Every structure is written in C-alpha cells, then in structure tokens.
Length: 167
Image 1: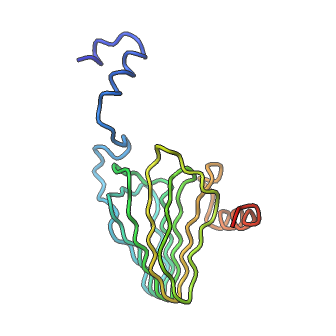
Image 2: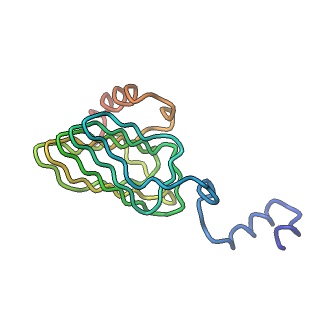
Image 3: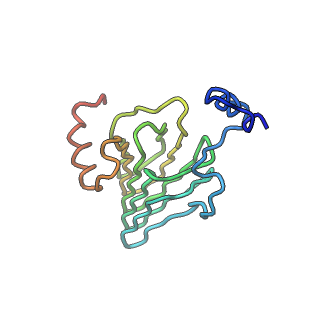
C-alpha cells in the first residue's frame, strides 16, 4: 500500500527498506539449482545462468571441469561449494567482488587462488572446500572488465598479474 501511495523516488526507496532481503535475480526463477557437477575421463564446462542454493559439489576424476559462477544467481548469502578431485583438474571462476573463502587439502597436487581478493561487504560468500589427490584446483577471481573473456584470456591475464599480487 505504501508503495502505491509513494509520490517520489525517496518514498518508494524507504518502502523497500522494510522488505525482507533476497537476491532479485533468483526470486521466482524456475531453473533447477546446480547441485552436483562432475567430469569423469573427459572435459565438462558448467556455465551460464546457473541457480545456486546453499550447497553444490564439483568433482573431477581423470578429467577437467570448468565451473563458471560469473553469471550464477543465488537467493542465499552463503554458498558452500565442495570440490573433489583425483588425477584431474577443477577451475572455479567467480566474479571479482564476490567474497570467496578457499580452504581444504590436496595431496600431490595444487590448490591456488588467482586474482585480487576484492570482495564487497554485502556480496554473497562462496566457501570453497577442496579435497584433492594428484589434482589441481584453481579459483579464478575474474575482474569486471574481463567478464565476457574466454578462459584462455583469463589465464593469461591473471597469471601475468601473479607477480603483482601479495603472496
């Protein structure tokens, strides 16, 4: 009722402050949430307008998995992503500004973060938990000016900036 009676933009903005907080991109979306993605003896790319819920799993065994969150939507403040890898590779792409917390354990492999950690205070948080054996997990924080870039361009640019980033 208050929104209908608002005459000025400021009055309408005040009515929004009283509403519960959700992410409008995910509200009312009919897409099925991304829960489990795997690559077994091959290459799998998961990208586009993914809908994420509270938990998702990315797994690779003797394969290569690209999990791209640049266009993902969520209705949650925190996402838990479990990455399992054995003799394979998983690359996770997140837009710069999203808060990313990476942790976990790898044996005979690598777990690496690429790009600037420039999370915004009100942005969603993605907790990436890694368990790997003889595999590689890379988390790529993609700058906004590279949002439409190919994976190859992202690799070149962020690997080139590696010397500029704090260790």
